[in-house]
Length: 264
Length: 240
Image 1 (cartoon, rainbow over the protein chains, first blue to last red):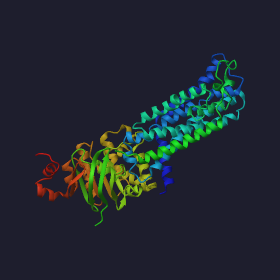
Image 2: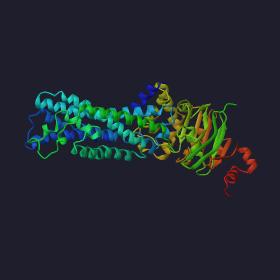
Image 3: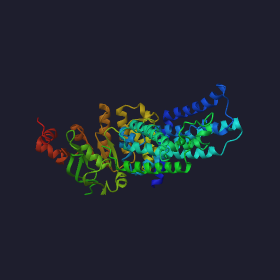
Image 4: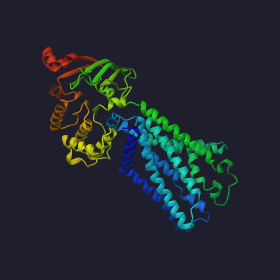
Protein backbone atom coordinates (compact mmCIF):
# COMPACT_ATOMS: atom_id res chain seq x y z
CA UNK A 1 0.00 0.00 0.00
CA UNK A 2 1.46 3.37 -0.98
CA UNK A 3 1.77 6.36 1.34
CA UNK A 4 -0.55 8.38 -0.91
CA UNK A 5 -3.28 5.75 -0.39
CA UNK A 6 -2.68 5.90 3.35
CA UNK A 7 -2.86 9.70 3.15
CA UNK A 8 -6.27 9.43 1.50
CA UNK A 9 -7.45 7.12 4.29
CA UNK A 10 -6.22 9.53 6.99
CA UNK A 11 -7.89 12.53 5.32
CA UNK A 12 -11.14 10.63 4.91
CA UNK A 13 -11.45 9.50 8.54
CA UNK A 14 -10.07 12.71 10.05
CA UNK A 15 -12.66 14.67 8.07
CA UNK A 16 -15.34 12.26 9.27
CA UNK A 17 -14.26 13.10 12.84
CA UNK A 18 -14.77 16.81 12.11
CA UNK A 19 -18.20 16.15 10.63
CA UNK A 20 -19.20 14.26 13.78
CA UNK A 21 -18.15 17.02 16.14
CA UNK A 22 -20.67 19.54 17.36
CA UNK A 23 -18.17 22.38 17.07
CA UNK A 24 -18.41 22.38 13.27
CA UNK A 25 -22.13 23.06 13.47
CA UNK A 26 -21.69 25.67 16.21
CA UNK A 27 -19.25 27.60 14.04
CA UNK A 28 -21.52 27.24 11.00
CA UNK A 29 -24.29 28.71 13.18
CA UNK A 30 -22.03 31.59 14.24
CA UNK A 31 -21.28 32.37 10.56
CA UNK A 32 -24.96 32.58 9.71
CA UNK A 33 -25.78 34.69 12.80
CA UNK A 34 -22.87 37.11 12.11
CA UNK A 35 -23.87 37.62 8.48
CA UNK A 36 -27.55 37.99 9.37
CA UNK A 37 -26.63 40.56 12.02
CA UNK A 38 -25.21 42.81 9.28
CA UNK A 39 -27.91 42.04 6.72
CA UNK A 40 -30.81 42.56 9.12
CA UNK A 41 -29.16 44.97 11.55
CA UNK A 42 -28.38 47.76 9.08
CA UNK A 43 -31.92 48.23 7.70
CA UNK A 44 -33.44 47.57 11.14
CA UNK A 45 -31.41 50.43 12.64
CA UNK A 46 -32.61 52.77 9.86
CA UNK A 47 -29.18 53.10 8.30
CA UNK A 48 -29.96 51.08 5.19
CA UNK A 49 -27.28 49.44 3.13
CA UNK A 50 -24.33 51.64 2.09
CA UNK A 51 -24.19 52.93 -1.50
CA UNK A 52 -20.61 51.71 -1.80
CA UNK A 53 -20.69 47.97 -2.60
CA UNK A 54 -17.08 47.64 -1.43
CA UNK A 55 -18.02 48.91 2.01
CA UNK A 56 -20.88 46.42 2.22
CA UNK A 57 -18.62 43.58 1.03
CA UNK A 58 -16.02 44.55 3.66
CA UNK A 59 -18.69 44.64 6.38
CA UNK A 60 -19.88 41.17 5.44
CA UNK A 61 -16.33 39.79 5.31
CA UNK A 62 -15.90 37.83 8.49
CA UNK A 63 -13.38 35.59 6.72
CA UNK A 64 -10.30 36.29 8.89
CA UNK A 65 -12.15 35.75 12.18
CA UNK A 66 -13.86 32.71 10.73
CA UNK A 67 -10.59 31.27 9.47
CA UNK A 68 -8.93 31.86 12.84
CA UNK A 69 -11.74 30.36 14.93
CA UNK A 70 -12.28 27.45 12.54
CA UNK A 71 -8.60 26.63 12.22
CA UNK A 72 -7.92 26.88 15.94
CA UNK A 73 -10.92 24.79 17.01
CA UNK A 74 -10.37 22.08 14.42
CA UNK A 75 -6.60 21.85 14.64
CA UNK A 76 -5.87 22.58 18.32
CA UNK A 77 -6.19 18.91 19.27
CA UNK A 78 -5.00 17.45 15.98
CA UNK A 79 -1.61 16.40 17.32
CA UNK A 80 -1.71 17.23 21.04
CA UNK A 81 -4.95 15.23 21.36
CA UNK A 82 -3.25 12.02 20.20
CA UNK A 83 -0.87 12.28 23.14
CA UNK A 84 -3.28 13.72 25.70
CA UNK A 85 -6.18 11.32 25.05
CA UNK A 86 -3.88 8.35 24.39
CA UNK A 87 -5.45 7.77 20.97
CA UNK A 88 -1.84 7.71 19.77
CA UNK A 89 -1.58 4.25 21.34
CA UNK A 90 -3.84 2.88 18.61
CA UNK A 91 -2.81 5.22 15.79
CA UNK A 92 0.98 5.37 15.98
CA UNK A 93 1.71 1.60 16.10
CA UNK A 94 0.33 1.34 12.56
CA UNK A 95 2.68 1.03 9.60
CA UNK A 96 2.15 4.59 8.49
CA UNK A 97 4.63 7.46 8.55
CA UNK A 98 3.94 10.22 11.02
CA UNK A 99 4.50 12.67 8.16
CA UNK A 100 1.52 11.07 6.42
CA UNK A 101 -0.57 11.29 9.58
CA UNK A 102 0.20 14.99 10.09
CA UNK A 103 -0.40 15.79 6.42
CA UNK A 104 -3.69 13.90 6.45
CA UNK A 105 -4.85 15.65 9.58
CA UNK A 106 -3.82 19.02 8.14
CA UNK A 107 -5.69 18.46 4.89
CA UNK A 108 -8.79 17.23 6.75
CA UNK A 109 -8.72 20.40 8.91
CA UNK A 110 -8.30 22.43 5.70
CA UNK A 111 -11.39 20.78 4.23
CA UNK A 112 -13.44 21.59 7.35
CA UNK A 113 -12.26 25.22 7.42
CA UNK A 114 -12.86 25.63 3.67
CA UNK A 115 -16.42 24.43 4.27
CA UNK A 116 -16.90 27.30 6.75
CA UNK A 117 -15.24 29.86 4.47
CA UNK A 118 -17.33 28.71 1.50
CA UNK A 119 -20.50 29.22 3.54
CA UNK A 120 -19.32 32.69 4.64
CA UNK A 121 -18.42 33.81 1.12
CA UNK A 122 -21.53 32.16 -0.28
CA UNK A 123 -23.67 34.37 1.94
CA UNK A 124 -21.58 37.42 0.95
CA UNK A 125 -22.02 36.70 -2.77
CA UNK A 126 -25.76 36.02 -2.57
CA UNK A 127 -26.30 39.13 -0.43
CA UNK A 128 -24.29 41.43 -2.74
CA UNK A 129 -26.05 40.00 -5.77
CA UNK A 130 -29.47 40.53 -4.17
CA UNK A 131 -28.74 44.07 -2.95
CA UNK A 132 -26.49 45.52 -5.68
CA UNK A 133 -27.06 43.17 -8.62
CA UNK A 134 -23.40 42.22 -9.03
CA UNK A 135 -20.38 40.87 -7.17
CA UNK A 136 -17.10 42.82 -7.29
CA UNK A 137 -14.03 40.95 -8.51
CA UNK A 138 -12.32 41.86 -5.22
CA UNK A 139 -14.50 39.22 -3.54
CA UNK A 140 -12.56 36.53 -5.40
CA UNK A 141 -9.26 38.12 -4.26
CA UNK A 142 -10.56 38.29 -0.70
CA UNK A 143 -11.63 34.62 -0.90
CA UNK A 144 -8.19 33.57 -2.16
CA UNK A 145 -6.44 35.55 0.57
CA UNK A 146 -8.81 34.11 3.17
CA UNK A 147 -7.91 30.56 2.10
CA UNK A 148 -4.22 31.41 2.35
CA UNK A 149 -4.79 33.02 5.75
CA UNK A 150 -6.71 29.94 6.97
CA UNK A 151 -3.88 27.71 5.76
CA UNK A 152 -1.30 29.76 7.64
CA UNK A 153 -3.38 29.87 10.86
CA UNK A 154 -3.85 26.10 10.59
CA UNK A 155 -0.08 25.67 10.27
CA UNK A 156 0.55 27.87 13.31
CA UNK A 157 -2.06 25.86 15.26
CA UNK A 158 -0.44 22.58 14.15
CA UNK A 159 2.91 23.89 15.33
CA UNK A 160 1.54 24.74 18.78
CA UNK A 161 -0.39 21.45 18.85
CA UNK A 162 2.81 19.52 18.15
CA UNK A 163 4.65 21.14 21.07
CA UNK A 164 1.77 21.30 23.57
CA UNK A 165 0.90 18.66 26.12
CA UNK A 166 -2.80 19.32 25.80
CA UNK A 167 -5.26 20.35 23.13
CA UNK A 168 -6.68 23.19 25.21
CA UNK A 169 -3.19 24.62 25.69
CA UNK A 170 -2.53 24.55 21.95
CA UNK A 171 -5.85 26.24 21.21
CA UNK A 172 -5.32 29.00 23.78
CA UNK A 173 -1.68 29.63 22.81
CA UNK A 174 -2.62 29.96 19.13
CA UNK A 175 -5.46 32.37 19.86
CA UNK A 176 -3.24 34.45 22.15
CA UNK A 177 -0.43 34.43 19.57
CA UNK A 178 -2.63 35.57 16.68
CA UNK A 179 -5.13 37.82 18.37
CA UNK A 180 -3.18 39.27 21.30
CA UNK A 181 0.58 39.11 20.76
CA UNK A 182 0.54 39.61 16.99
CA UNK A 183 -2.24 42.21 17.33
CA UNK A 184 -0.43 44.24 20.00
CA UNK A 185 2.89 44.23 18.10
CA UNK A 186 0.97 45.20 14.96
CA UNK A 187 -0.60 48.15 16.80
CA UNK A 188 2.73 49.34 18.19
CA UNK A 189 4.52 49.07 14.83
CA UNK A 190 1.67 50.80 13.02
CA UNK A 191 1.65 53.69 15.53
CA UNK A 192 5.40 54.02 15.01
CA UNK A 193 4.89 53.96 11.21
CA UNK A 194 6.98 50.80 10.94
CA UNK A 195 6.16 47.93 8.57
CA UNK A 196 4.17 45.08 10.08
CA UNK A 197 3.30 42.97 7.03
CA UNK A 198 5.14 40.00 8.53
CA UNK A 199 2.59 39.67 11.34
CA UNK A 200 -0.25 37.22 10.92
CA UNK A 201 -2.84 39.67 12.25
CA UNK A 202 -1.83 42.21 9.58
CA UNK A 203 -1.97 39.50 6.93
CA UNK A 204 -5.52 38.80 8.08
CA UNK A 205 -6.41 42.46 7.55
CA UNK A 206 -5.46 42.10 3.89
CA UNK A 207 -8.46 39.78 3.43
CA UNK A 208 -10.75 42.77 4.07
CA UNK A 209 -8.64 45.66 2.77
CA UNK A 210 -8.70 44.25 -0.78
CA UNK A 211 -12.06 46.05 -0.94
CA UNK A 212 -10.29 49.38 -0.34
CA UNK A 213 -8.03 51.08 2.23
CA UNK A 214 -9.20 51.77 5.78
CA UNK A 215 -9.99 55.43 4.95
CA UNK A 216 -12.58 54.33 2.40
CA UNK A 217 -14.63 52.88 5.23
CA UNK A 218 -14.26 55.71 7.74
CA UNK A 219 -17.44 57.75 7.94
CA UNK A 220 -16.72 61.47 7.70
CA UNK A 221 -13.29 61.06 6.12
CA UNK A 222 -9.86 60.76 7.70
CA UNK A 223 -9.35 62.08 11.23
CA UNK A 224 -6.51 64.64 11.33
CA UNK A 225 -4.98 63.38 14.57
CA UNK A 226 -4.50 59.82 13.32
CA UNK A 227 -0.90 58.71 12.58
CA UNK A 228 -0.43 58.18 8.83
CA UNK A 229 0.56 54.52 9.24
CA UNK A 230 -2.80 53.70 10.81
CA UNK A 231 -4.65 54.21 7.56
CA UNK A 232 -2.27 52.43 5.23
CA UNK A 233 -3.74 49.31 3.77
CA UNK A 234 -1.36 46.34 4.07
CA UNK A 235 0.57 45.43 0.94
CA UNK A 236 -1.22 42.36 -0.40
CA UNK A 237 1.87 40.82 -2.02
CA UNK A 238 3.94 41.17 1.14
CA UNK A 239 1.09 39.86 3.30
CA UNK A 240 0.64 36.90 0.95
CA UNK A 241 4.35 36.19 1.20
CA UNK A 242 4.17 36.35 5.00
CA UNK A 243 1.20 33.97 5.07
CA UNK A 244 2.95 31.53 2.72
CA UNK A 245 6.04 31.58 4.96
CA UNK A 246 3.96 30.93 8.12
CA UNK A 247 2.13 28.15 6.29
CA UNK A 248 5.23 26.33 5.11
CA UNK A 249 7.53 26.96 8.09
CA UNK A 250 5.04 26.06 10.82
CA UNK A 251 3.72 23.05 8.91
CA UNK A 252 7.19 21.60 8.33
CA UNK A 253 8.13 22.29 11.95
CA UNK A 254 5.00 20.51 13.20
CA UNK A 255 5.89 17.44 11.10
CA UNK A 256 9.47 17.45 12.34
CA UNK A 257 8.43 17.79 16.00
CA UNK A 258 5.68 15.13 15.74
CA UNK A 259 8.12 12.68 14.19
CA UNK A 260 10.47 13.15 17.12
CA UNK A 261 7.83 13.22 19.83
CA UNK A 262 7.58 10.13 22.03
CA UNK A 263 4.46 8.71 23.62
CA UNK A 264 5.58 7.79 27.15
CA UNK B 1 14.69 -21.26 15.65
CA UNK B 2 13.20 -18.01 14.37
CA UNK B 3 13.03 -15.19 16.88
CA UNK B 4 10.27 -12.70 16.00
CA UNK B 5 11.18 -10.46 18.95
CA UNK B 6 14.78 -9.59 19.74
CA UNK B 7 15.70 -7.01 22.35
CA UNK B 8 19.39 -6.26 22.24
CA UNK B 9 21.12 -4.31 25.04
CA UNK B 10 18.26 -1.90 25.28
CA UNK B 11 18.71 1.14 27.55
CA UNK B 12 16.33 4.02 28.04
CA UNK B 13 16.79 7.18 30.02
CA UNK B 14 13.97 9.57 30.95
CA UNK B 15 16.11 12.65 31.51
CA UNK B 16 18.51 11.24 34.14
CA UNK B 17 16.31 8.36 35.25
CA UNK B 18 17.45 5.01 33.89
CA UNK B 19 14.32 3.05 33.02
CA UNK B 20 15.99 0.25 31.04
CA UNK B 21 19.50 -0.95 31.73
CA UNK B 22 21.03 -3.01 28.91
CA UNK B 23 18.01 -5.30 28.64
CA UNK B 24 18.39 -8.24 26.27
CA UNK B 25 15.69 -10.78 25.47
CA UNK B 26 14.88 -13.14 22.62
CA UNK B 27 11.44 -14.58 22.02
CA UNK B 28 11.00 -17.54 19.72
CA UNK B 29 8.27 -18.10 17.17
CA UNK B 30 4.83 -18.90 18.63
CA UNK B 31 6.15 -18.52 22.16
CA UNK B 32 3.90 -16.82 24.69
CA UNK B 33 6.06 -14.87 27.11
CA UNK B 34 4.91 -12.89 30.13
CA UNK B 35 6.83 -9.82 31.23
CA UNK B 36 6.67 -9.41 34.99
CA UNK B 37 8.02 -6.75 37.28
CA UNK B 38 6.98 -4.26 39.95
CA UNK B 39 5.67 -0.80 39.09
CA UNK B 40 8.38 1.24 37.38
CA UNK B 41 10.41 -1.87 36.48
CA UNK B 42 10.52 -0.91 32.80
CA UNK B 43 7.84 -3.24 31.38
CA UNK B 44 5.81 -0.57 29.59
CA UNK B 45 8.97 1.16 28.39
CA UNK B 46 10.17 -2.10 26.81
CA UNK B 47 6.86 -2.71 25.06
CA UNK B 48 6.54 0.91 23.92
CA UNK B 49 9.97 0.74 22.31
CA UNK B 50 8.89 -2.44 20.48
CA UNK B 51 5.76 -0.59 19.29
CA UNK B 52 7.75 2.40 18.03
CA UNK B 53 6.22 4.76 20.57
CA UNK B 54 9.51 5.43 22.36
CA UNK B 55 13.08 5.63 21.09
CA UNK B 56 15.76 3.75 23.03
CA UNK B 57 18.74 5.69 24.38
CA UNK B 58 20.94 2.84 23.21
CA UNK B 59 20.61 -0.71 21.97
CA UNK B 60 18.14 -2.04 19.44
CA UNK B 61 14.82 -3.85 19.17
CA UNK B 62 13.85 -6.09 16.26
CA UNK B 63 10.54 -7.48 15.08
CA UNK B 64 11.04 -10.36 12.64
CA UNK B 65 14.61 -9.16 12.19
CA UNK B 66 13.57 -5.59 11.31
CA UNK B 67 14.97 -2.78 13.42
CA UNK B 68 12.01 -0.95 14.97
CA UNK B 69 13.84 2.39 15.13
CA UNK B 70 15.34 2.29 11.65
CA UNK B 71 12.38 0.83 9.75
CA UNK B 72 9.35 1.40 11.98
CA UNK B 73 6.69 1.04 9.28
CA UNK B 74 7.99 -2.35 8.16
CA UNK B 75 8.39 -3.61 11.72
CA UNK B 76 4.98 -2.35 12.84
CA UNK B 77 3.22 -4.09 9.96
CA UNK B 78 3.93 -7.38 11.73
CA UNK B 79 2.53 -6.57 15.15
CA UNK B 80 -0.77 -6.05 16.91
CA UNK B 81 -0.67 -4.06 20.12
CA UNK B 82 -2.56 -3.03 23.19
CA UNK B 83 -0.70 -0.43 25.21
CA UNK B 84 -2.32 0.36 28.57
CA UNK B 85 -5.95 1.40 28.07
CA UNK B 86 -5.71 3.22 24.76
CA UNK B 87 -7.93 6.14 23.93
CA UNK B 88 -10.38 5.92 21.05
CA UNK B 89 -11.89 8.68 18.95
CA UNK B 90 -15.14 9.31 20.82
CA UNK B 91 -17.12 10.43 17.77
CA UNK B 92 -16.45 7.27 15.77
CA UNK B 93 -18.14 3.89 16.19
CA UNK B 94 -16.17 0.63 16.70
CA UNK B 95 -16.94 -0.30 13.09
CA UNK B 96 -15.54 3.01 11.79
CA UNK B 97 -12.50 2.84 14.08
CA UNK B 98 -11.64 -0.68 12.95
CA UNK B 99 -12.26 0.29 9.35
CA UNK B 100 -9.88 3.27 9.74
CA UNK B 101 -7.13 1.16 11.31
CA UNK B 102 -7.68 -1.73 8.91
CA UNK B 103 -7.45 0.51 5.87
CA UNK B 104 -4.26 2.07 7.22
CA UNK B 105 -2.89 -1.48 7.21
CA UNK B 106 -3.91 -2.04 3.62
CA UNK B 107 -7.10 -4.05 4.27
CA UNK B 108 -10.16 -3.16 2.22
CA UNK B 109 -13.51 -4.16 0.78
CA UNK B 110 -15.36 -7.32 1.74
CA UNK B 111 -12.26 -8.81 3.34
CA UNK B 112 -12.04 -5.94 5.79
CA UNK B 113 -15.80 -5.91 6.49
CA UNK B 114 -15.78 -9.65 7.13
CA UNK B 115 -12.75 -9.43 9.43
CA UNK B 116 -14.27 -6.52 11.38
CA UNK B 117 -17.39 -8.63 12.03
CA UNK B 118 -15.19 -11.54 13.08
CA UNK B 119 -13.13 -9.63 15.64
CA UNK B 120 -16.17 -7.73 16.93
CA UNK B 121 -17.85 -11.11 17.55
CA UNK B 122 -14.70 -12.44 19.18
CA UNK B 123 -14.62 -9.62 21.74
CA UNK B 124 -18.41 -9.67 22.12
CA UNK B 125 -19.20 -6.15 21.01
CA UNK B 126 -21.76 -7.15 18.35
CA UNK B 127 -24.50 -4.99 19.84
CA UNK B 128 -22.28 -1.92 20.01
CA UNK B 129 -20.82 -1.77 16.50
CA UNK B 130 -22.72 1.36 15.46
CA UNK B 131 -22.69 3.16 18.83
CA UNK B 132 -20.24 6.03 19.26
CA UNK B 133 -17.30 5.09 21.48
CA UNK B 134 -17.93 8.12 23.73
CA UNK B 135 -20.64 5.98 25.37
CA UNK B 136 -18.28 3.06 26.10
CA UNK B 137 -17.06 1.95 29.52
CA UNK B 138 -13.38 1.28 30.16
CA UNK B 139 -13.90 -2.46 29.86
CA UNK B 140 -15.64 -2.09 26.51
CA UNK B 141 -12.79 0.08 25.24
CA UNK B 142 -10.38 -2.63 26.35
CA UNK B 143 -12.37 -5.20 24.35
CA UNK B 144 -12.21 -2.89 21.34
CA UNK B 145 -8.47 -2.52 21.90
CA UNK B 146 -8.14 -6.29 21.67
CA UNK B 147 -10.24 -6.28 18.49
CA UNK B 148 -7.97 -3.73 16.81
CA UNK B 149 -4.87 -5.65 17.89
CA UNK B 150 -6.21 -8.82 16.23
CA UNK B 151 -7.84 -7.14 13.22
CA UNK B 152 -5.03 -7.70 10.71
CA UNK B 153 -4.18 -11.15 12.11
CA UNK B 154 -0.59 -10.20 12.99
CA UNK B 155 2.01 -12.88 13.70
CA UNK B 156 3.21 -11.00 16.80
CA UNK B 157 1.08 -9.62 19.65
CA UNK B 158 2.52 -7.10 22.09
CA UNK B 159 0.17 -6.50 24.99
CA UNK B 160 0.66 -4.20 27.98
CA UNK B 161 -1.74 -4.92 30.83
CA UNK B 162 -4.36 -6.02 28.32
CA UNK B 163 -6.96 -7.13 30.87
CA UNK B 164 -6.94 -3.81 32.72
CA UNK B 165 -10.47 -2.57 33.35
CA UNK B 166 -12.19 -5.80 32.36
CA UNK B 167 -14.78 -7.37 34.69
CA UNK B 168 -14.13 -10.95 35.92
CA UNK B 169 -16.07 -12.44 33.00
CA UNK B 170 -14.16 -10.19 30.63
CA UNK B 171 -10.85 -11.33 32.12
CA UNK B 172 -11.76 -14.99 31.57
CA UNK B 173 -12.97 -14.33 28.03
CA UNK B 174 -9.85 -12.33 27.26
CA UNK B 175 -7.65 -15.13 28.56
CA UNK B 176 -9.47 -17.67 26.41
CA UNK B 177 -9.06 -15.47 23.32
CA UNK B 178 -5.33 -14.99 23.90
CA UNK B 179 -4.86 -18.68 24.67
CA UNK B 180 -6.64 -19.49 21.41
CA UNK B 181 -4.83 -17.07 19.11
CA UNK B 182 -1.57 -17.49 21.03
CA UNK B 183 -1.13 -21.03 19.67
CA UNK B 184 -0.27 -19.60 16.28
CA UNK B 185 1.26 -16.30 17.31
CA UNK B 186 4.14 -14.93 19.26
CA UNK B 187 2.70 -13.18 22.31
CA UNK B 188 4.71 -10.90 24.55
CA UNK B 189 2.65 -9.40 27.31
CA UNK B 190 3.20 -7.45 30.47
CA UNK B 191 0.99 -8.02 33.45
CA UNK B 192 0.82 -7.79 37.22
CA UNK B 193 -1.49 -10.79 37.39
CA UNK B 194 0.67 -13.86 37.99
CA UNK B 195 -2.34 -16.18 37.63
CA UNK B 196 -3.13 -14.68 34.24
CA UNK B 197 0.47 -15.07 33.13
CA UNK B 198 0.73 -18.72 34.21
CA UNK B 199 -2.48 -19.56 32.35
CA UNK B 200 -1.37 -17.98 29.10
CA UNK B 201 2.41 -18.28 29.04
CA UNK B 202 4.97 -21.04 29.31
CA UNK B 203 7.84 -18.61 29.85
CA UNK B 204 8.29 -15.41 31.82
CA UNK B 205 10.82 -12.64 31.95
CA UNK B 206 11.11 -10.92 35.32
CA UNK B 207 12.62 -7.44 35.31
CA UNK B 208 13.22 -4.79 37.93
CA UNK B 209 14.82 -1.35 37.64
CA UNK B 210 15.27 -1.96 33.95
CA UNK B 211 17.34 -5.12 34.39
CA UNK B 212 16.51 -8.66 33.45
CA UNK B 213 16.46 -10.80 36.59
CA UNK B 214 15.20 -14.07 35.15
CA UNK B 215 14.01 -15.43 31.83
CA UNK B 216 12.93 -19.02 31.97
CA UNK B 217 10.11 -21.53 31.70
CA UNK B 218 7.54 -21.08 34.43
CA UNK B 219 7.93 -24.76 35.30
CA UNK B 220 11.69 -24.28 35.82
CA UNK B 221 11.16 -21.25 38.03
CA UNK B 222 8.52 -23.09 40.05
CA UNK B 223 10.94 -25.97 40.58
CA UNK B 224 13.71 -23.62 41.66
CA UNK B 225 11.64 -21.27 43.86
CA UNK B 226 8.64 -23.52 44.72
CA UNK B 227 6.20 -21.17 43.01
CA UNK B 228 6.16 -18.35 40.47
CA UNK B 229 4.95 -15.98 43.18
CA UNK B 230 7.93 -16.85 45.36
CA UNK B 231 10.28 -16.49 42.42
CA UNK B 232 8.83 -13.08 41.63
CA UNK B 233 9.06 -11.87 45.23
CA UNK B 234 12.57 -13.17 45.84
CA UNK B 235 13.96 -11.85 42.59
CA UNK B 236 12.38 -8.43 42.93
CA UNK B 237 13.59 -8.06 46.51
CA UNK B 238 10.23 -8.44 48.26
CA UNK B 239 9.57 -10.45 51.40
CA UNK B 240 7.16 -13.31 51.79
